[in-house]
Length: 162
Image (cartoon, rainbow, N blue to C red; front, side, top):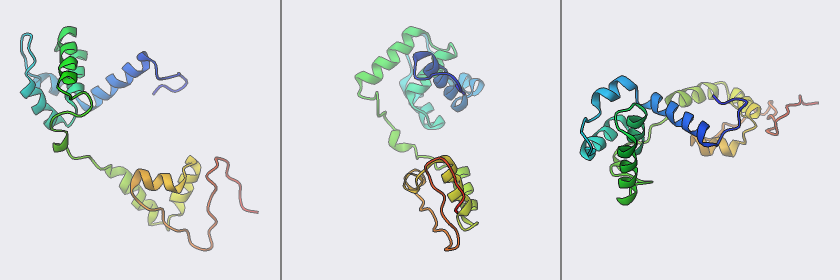
């Protein structure tokens, strides 16, 4: 989304976090479910939301702040509390949330593999991706090419065999 713009600064990182928050936690449903309290955050309710939405409490707090459901002081307090309780990197109930498997990616790979892997080899070549990286990212081995097919180079430029 930031094509042509140098990223990594606080502005583009903030935009990326807000986009992810809006994508993962839709405004209307989240606002309806977010626990309303005066000044003190309801940690039990926040962790219940974590299990339902499958996002971190830190992300929930950020989204609540972005939507104006909590103020800057409450947001700061939430982050301080997570750090003080040792939950800055690993939160309570993280082990209760299963890692999602990418369904569409697996379906696309299966479709490409049905074609004797030629399309998949071509795609990896176009991307400049080594077979080892493909295996590491997907957990799947790249199928062998038929003997009458020459593999594509993964150096970026594709030249036809001479």
